Length: 526
Image 1 (cartoon, rainbow, N blue to C red):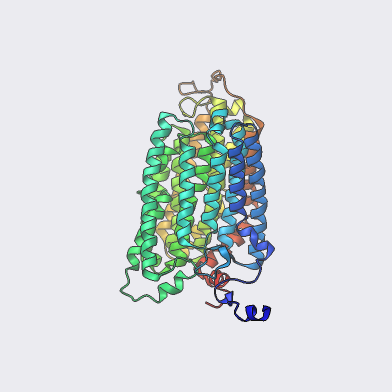
Image 2: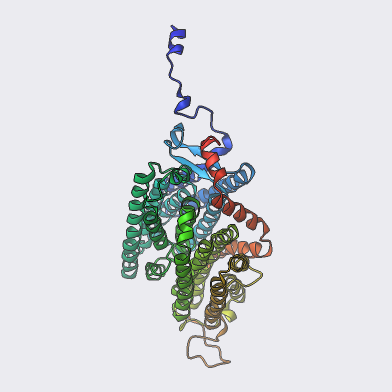
């Protein structure tokens, strides 16, 4: 009887993966599991608002350790794939992690940990009850899933997850300005998401697969008359809107200054970078020929985004609004790398993305501390912070030099890589604009530092005089710790950039030649 059953047993090896998953490969989906469980535990502690930050920080600490292990495994073994339900790809939904996905997931988890620590002082009982920490964990589920997925429809799903959670975080205070900003943020992002969904349906209709490793080969088999250019235009528009590139960026300065500082900081560090990542993954790896055809258009968008972003920062009196425009200007530098399209340029764009995630989050956290010490975000009302907190003035100056791309801090190296890549490919205009943007950014952040820190007091204070400081809120130790983690990274990356350069170089090489990525999914048989 046993022999008869064995003779008629189906051979599942043709449909399913029969080998057990290596223990180290479980790190691929660990970020999703950790953030979902952490969010659920925080939600269960809704009434115990003191326990929520402890749980969230513990979960995010585990997430950072898990992502360090994932990055080490990817650098050691190459791209890693884990298929859900053990169904063979392309039918099984795949999580595929290469150097790009691993480094961006790790940096995003560090940024979220810093914001969660800062949030101990920044979030009150009301915002915790309304879900600050559960929404933060859910946001990290969406961000991690977007960086790790190997399926383009699931990339859309993770975008939806982070959109829902970010909308919840925007309206936590239930104030009029927050609701106004949230409506603009939600409407524009929903339009982008709809375009993304339309493009994905269009893609499936053309090639019959949504597995990112399966798409390049299927694209190559399409006839020349296939409307792939329309598909590329749809994806570019959707992701450029998500990344806040010109002229689809007005939702960002309208919304990022309204929520709590910790929320603004996480948004500034992560949300637009997911859009940039999607642009690189789709336009560089999946649609390289059409990226090349659209290179001039992308370059124009990059130039406009860089210049208008930094000019917007120069025009602002509100500190957080000025930082929002600097986020936009940085997106232009990353898009310059996509426009150039060489391995060095993509490496520079990825390096810039890592730098921007860290420094923009840190600047928003620092803006909150400046407002606590000075009593306002308005540059007209700030002043004298150098006299009141010289150590904090030095920290803000370090971040200002870093965001301007000046040595010896983290923003210097990606600008060098991008300018070299532009000059090597005769993109002299892009190189000039990157340098000019650095100069204008130096003026913009120098203006902020002079007004808020160096000046003796608020606007109207006589030169050489010092005004009495208004009553201020003390800065908690947790705020210093959250900011200190990021400032340390800014300095370390600036002084020792080689390890990050090697990782972003490997990530860019994988985007230009996805053979290893495809091999990790199909085992080299595709």
